[in-house]
Length: 91
Picture 1 (cartoon, rainbow, N blue to C red):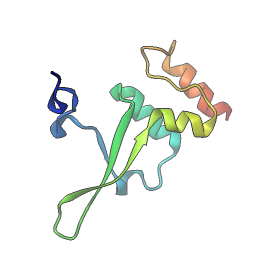
Picture 2 (cartoon, one colour):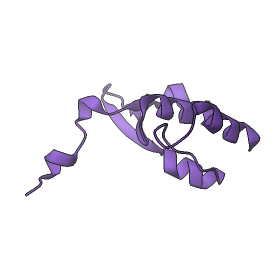
Picture 3 (cartoon, rainbow, N blue to C red):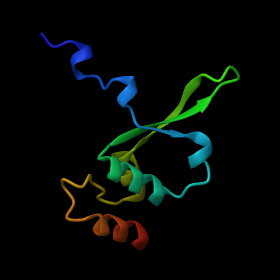
Picture 4 (tube, rainbow, N blue to C red):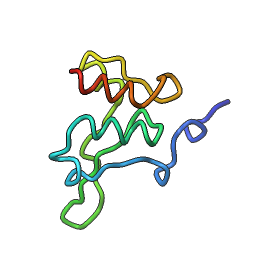
């Protein structure tokens, strides 16, 4: 039997953006960071009043691709990062 713990990514290994650092970022910057990290998803966090990190949202490469109408993929499936960047610039 496979347990949830067997398929989850440990919290220490999650990629996260601080909301403050991406609040004014361009979508291309977020896509570039996801591609560099080889990740399909990344959390967006923000500290609460006590300084604890709270999840504010999540970035999804496939959701961004759908919203932009672009075929964005991770490097394993794309020919090159230049192609992804060119697709973003063209739209």
